[in-house]
Image (cartoon, rainbow over all chains, first blue to last red; front, top):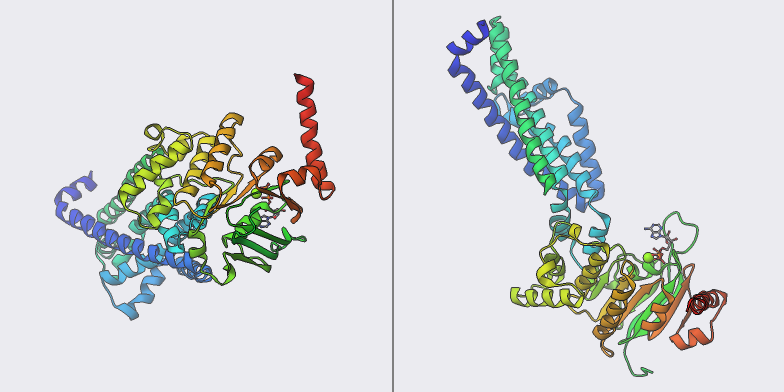
Length: 207
Length: 259
Ligand SMILES: Nc1ncnc2c1ncn2[C@@H]1O[C@H](COP(=O)(O)OP(=O)(O)OP(=O)(O)O)[C@@H](O)[C@H]1O
Ligand SMILES: [Mg+2]
């Protein structure tokens, strides 16, 4: 009851936290996909570099997010841009693993035929591997999105705003309603996004 | 019979040993193939036929020996350029699942930047040549075709830009006897005699002897005989070729017994 009253009174506050959060997540996601796409192409062209890149980002991925945020402060300072950088770094592991595996698992006969017909390696990547990897690409994006929504909550500690701000201020002022709403919004956003994207994924599969 | 024809493909002591294998998949093969020949390659499973074809368009590089196309050593050539001059129908067909029949056939013409009208006409022509109705099939995806229909489109795709050299790896493997006869005749017609050089792999001795101007019989990576169909039938070079001919004769007897 108290929770609903709180929401009623602080309607604007919650809405702003939510929209800030979504904005931060979307910017991070778009940048992540662009970077991962470039790295995937590089990894397909240079096998060794690909192994190295995946290894590097698996190490970054294993750093606890709070520690990584803290590590970035001396380099980039506080604020939203630092948070987005960290989110992009985290996403690389999830995205690259799905993109590269997808590209590599494309039907071998199709790649052999394409090579035999005289497609260049770049042409094979864009005309054969990419269109035949839409499913794993999409799965990677869905996983990255859901994980970004959760990790972005922690970014409030370095002044990035969003849903996490409800939680941090809630902790400072001992306001349980704020903390609870922070949790509800982030979990709800994560679940809703996941559900919508799973639906889209199913439609891609049916094609 | 083609004394003055140019040499189209020459294999000079070509060998290939795959990593970790204790034998040569292709073992010291030397063949000289004239422009305009229709060579069939006959051999049991694993005898190195596909490996030999794949070295011809640089999908694989030989460990020893040289391959020379029209006087040019392909080991020094740009692989992409070599492949664009050669049509290749791979054994596993390998149609692109995300493209329609029409788009599949149009891949190489598009790479060579043909204009749209020319591509459209060529695509229809080839589909008919493969024995399929264009209006019915052009807009289907490979998953909507039977195995034999896929194979025929694979052949059409390889023929798209009318290359001077064609590598055909069991292009009729999944096709029924009646369609197969038609396609054999069609292929002979496309080959047309003088200017095109075909390398055609098959398991089927009848097909090999019927289509080939010369037949290369392969066993365990080696070419045991390379000769005209008549000579192969009359004077088998070794026990393996003999057993092939023998198996064919056995089948004939079986037929005589039936009728
Ligand atoms: N990529 C590869 N790696 C390792 N070994 C290979 C590879 N490709 C072929 N081989 C081996 O090389 C030998 C010749 O294979 P190849 O595919 O040339 O036979 P083939 O004559 O085409 O047989 P089939 O009639 O069954 O298609 C076989 O023993 C095979 O196991
Ligand atoms: Mg083979």
